[in-house]
Every structure is written in C-alpha cells, then in structure tokens.
Length: 396
Image 1 (cartoon, rainbow, N blue to C red):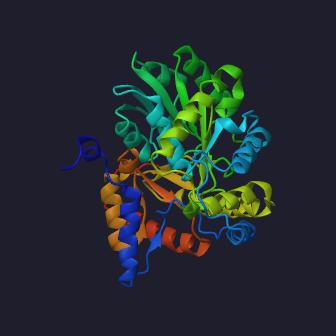
Image 2 (cartoon, rainbow, N blue to C red; image 1 turned 90 degrees about the vertical axis):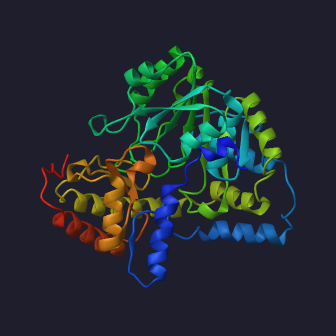
Image 3 (cartoon, rainbow, N blue to C red; image 1 turned 45 degrees about the vertical axis):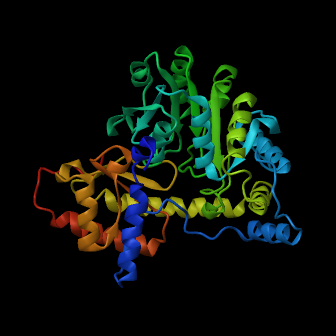
C-alpha cells in the first residue's frame, strides 16, 4: 500500500528520455543526446587527488550531519567573497547535492496547505518537493516575450493569504536565462511587500556568458537577505555531479532545523567527498574557467543552428547549459516532437511538458562539438521534413 503523497509524484521525464536514449545506444544505434543535465568533463584532477589524500588519511567515518566544520567555514568564506553574503559557518549546512538543500528547506519552512510560487517553466523537482511537504505549488507562467522571467506584477497577482515562498532559479534550468540586478531588485520589493520568503537556487552561478553577471538576490539589501535561503553546490561548475555535495545558507534557526531533518534522514554527506568539495573551493579555478569557455562556444554553435530552423524560436541563453526552444509553430506537442525526432533521427531532447510547458523542448549543450554538429544537422533535417505548417520565424 503506497502513501497518498507518493502517489502524487511524477517520474522524472529527463531520466526517462535519457534511459530511452541509452537503451537505443545499447541496441547499436548512433544517438545524439542533448538530454543530459550534467557536464561531460572529468572532475578536475586536483579535486580527485584531494579525495585520494583524504582516504589515505582515514577520512571515512561519520561526521556532523550539517557537514564538516572546515567545509562549512570555507563555504561561508566563498559566499562572502563571490556573492557579497555574510554568513557564519553555523548558518551553512552541507547536503547530498543542491537538491537535498532545496528539499530539506521546503520541508522545514512550509505547513500543509501553504502555497509556494514557482515560475514556469521550472526545474522538474520543485513542484514535487512542495507536494511532498504538504504544500501547494502555484505555477506562474512566463513567456518568450518576457524572456521567460517572472515579472513583479505577475508575482504580486499570484500572492494569496496562503503564499509562503518563492522558488527562484537564476541562472535558470531549463531556459538558461539570468536575472539582472534591476529585475531582482524589482522582485525583492514585491517579496518584502507581501512578507514572503525566497529559496534561491544558484547551482548554475558560475556558468554565465557574454559578460553577464550572476547576482544573488540575498545580496540586494539586509531585508531581502533576512528572507532568503541560498542553495548551491559543486555538481555543475566543477563537474562533480556524482559526488553529491551541495549546501544551503540562511537564517540560523532555519538552517539548524534543516540540518536536524538531515540528521534523521541521510546523516552526513560522504566524508571524503566533502574534502573534495573543500579542494574545489580552495584550489585553482582555471579549469572551471576553461569549462565555461567551452560551454560558451558550444552554446554559440547550437544557437546558430537553431536560428536557421523554420518553426523554432528561442531566447539565446545567458547561463547554465540549456536552450529552451519554442516549437509551438510545428503544431506538435513537446512529447510528440521529442518522440519523433528520437525514433526517426536518433536525437534525444527533453519535452517541455516535464518543465510545465508542452510547447517547448529543452536541449543541453553539455556534450562535445562533434555531437552538437551531427545532432543539429539531424534536427534540421527533421524540422525541414515536417508537413508544411504556418511555421513562425526561426529567429526571435
């Protein structure tokens, strides 16, 4: 007998499409996958070496549920240096990836029936996290016309007496958009006016392009700082997806509660993996910059291809490693589009339905240029062979 709350949870469409692509590859098919949400680089060698050293030093035992003190201190220093945020180590907790930080904070911050505002399109797990906590996800739909960003007016109109939280993700998955300082300031005014809290998912903060700057909403003033929980991790920037090390920071009472929850669920994050995360923060950052440059070039190539395809539209992404493609002019749903291009042309994309919008698809450029060139040529052939429709312009 399964609980009612778990029966409400939907499986991850990103994992489903990745599994299907892997099965096709196992059957001998040449699949170009743009589905993965992880860097295709190896974790930098100095981080791997730090873990080997930690293992040799016996760093294999239980640790504090909230994380190794030396790592919590280093994260607090990083937040001050990189983001202009002042936290004591006690205001930081280390989690099994950024995802657990988000999950734990939602669990300790909302009561059954509380509403959580989620700009759509959204990362697939946000609504499910809210439902598992007994909350009500309230989707606020954004559009290509507003660069897929929630506006202050939209935020204000979505607020009810039950609204508790806003989930804010910048740089964004799946759209790749990045909120600028002025946009965040305008949102912060509404957040404070309505006495809301913010959970800021900043996992892609290091992956920004074209001179764009990542701004943490918590850095925009004392009042919004006091109402914000910042979540981040090492998976995307340092190619450490399998290491499962993330963190959250915010008011100490909330962080302590979230760490207590962790103490009764997973306990501490893998001890020697935390020493790898410490090395990532304290070691050379040249490899991070190199990976970002490679992502930027892949992004340029993929955007150039997509802008030539009739019936497809996009807002060129300024961050993360995704492109959110508007394919409504094809007359297909995102699921139909993705199924057809996978089965007929062996190109794996993720349907926008998974992110709350069935008229878009998500492409990841976290793969090599050869795959991008080959896969884009196949996608162009597929789009070109669709039955003539009243397709829109490829370029915005």
